[in-house]
Length: 510
Image (cartoon, rainbow, N blue to C red):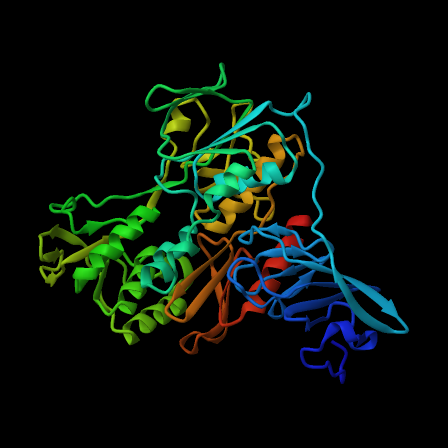
C-alpha cells in the first residue's frame, strides 16, 4: 500500500472505492451484500473474488499476492485472481468472482460471475482410454478430480483399500481426534460427488498385482482391470512396534479414518495414555488427548522432540508448549514391554497406561511397485513429470521420489499438500500435458492453539538463523546448507511463510 494511504474499513464494494487507494499488489477486504469480497490490484487491473479460503475458511486478506494468484495464509492454498480457481491444494474448491468496473478513477464491484468450465477432452489419439488410480488418499483423490476438471471423458477408476471415501487425513490427528471437528467435515467429498463426475470409487479394493505388459491390475478377490494409464498413490504404512505386548487391543496406530474413530472410542473409557514417539503424529495425538482431559505421557529416544527436523530451538518450544498443557515427557528412553495396564521403559520405569498410541514413523508402501518391476529407491523413482521407469505408470504422494529442480536433490516427502499437488500434476501428465512437478514442499503441524509452518526441505543443515523468539511462539527459523537456504519454519508469522515459499519458487524457475 502507498505510504499515507487510508483504506475504508470493510466497505460496500458496490458503492465504489477510489482506485488511488489500491496500489499494485494491494488487497482490500470489503463486502457485496452479506458476502466478504477481496479486491486485488495487479498493474492496471483490479479483481474481485471471495475472501474466504475454501479449505479451512482462512481470511485471504491475511495472505499475499504472487503473480495473478492470492495465497492463503494458513495452509498455502492458491487461487487465480482471474477465475477464482483453486490452482494448488490443499483447497480443492474455487472461490467466487465478481465483475469489476472502473469508471472515473473509481472501482465498482458488479454482479457475480458464473464459474468457468473447461471443454470436454474426449479420448483421442495420445490420451489414455482409461485411467486407474491405486490409492484413495490425498494424491489419488486429487488426481481423479483433476482428470475430470481437465475435461477428460474416459474411464476413471479410483481403487482404495480403505473402507471410507477419501478423507481429510491431517485432521485425524488434530481437531477431529480432539473432538473439535464434526464427522461431516472429514470426507473430502460426499459420495454423490464421485457418482456425478463419473469417478468409479471402489472401497476395500486391495490391488495385489500389476501387469505392465498387459496393462492390467489384479484386485484381491479375482477382478482384473485394464488401464490405459496407471497412477500409483499407495502412500505410506505406519511402522509397527515389535516389543512384547505390542499387539494388545489397547495399543493403537493412527493412519486412517477407521483408526481415528477407534482411538476416539478407546479414549472414551481410558484415562492414562502413553504415546510412543515424539513425531508429528505422536505429539498431535498428545495434544488431542489432552484436549479430552486425558493424562498423557510421551516416550521417545531423542533428547529433544523434533530437533532432527526443526532444530533445538523449535524442539524446545514444542516440548515447553506440551508441558504447559500437562504432557509428561520421558526422553532418552524406549519401550521394552507393554502390559494391559503398564508400559515398561528401557530405563526400568513403568508407566500406567490403559491407552497406548504408537507413532514411530512410516514406510513408503512400495511392495506393489517392486513386484511390477518399477525402479525403487526408498520410494518409487519418478522423473520431473512423475512418470516411473515403466511406460504408462505414474507415481505420486508419499511413495514418489522425484528430482527437485531447486536443490538438485532426489526428494521423497511425506506431506499432505505435496501429495495433493503431485496427484494433480500426474493427472495433467497422463493427459499428455508435460507439466513439471516444481512445487515447493510445505506442511503444517498444529499443537493446541499453535501452528508450525514448514516450507522447503532440509534433511541436514550447517547453519540455522532465528529471527524472533520461539518461546513466545513468534519466530522465523531459516535452515542453510552450503551457503544456500533450504527451508524456513515459522510460528505466528503466516506471511513470512508465504514469502519464503514464493522466493523458493523463483529459485526453481531460475
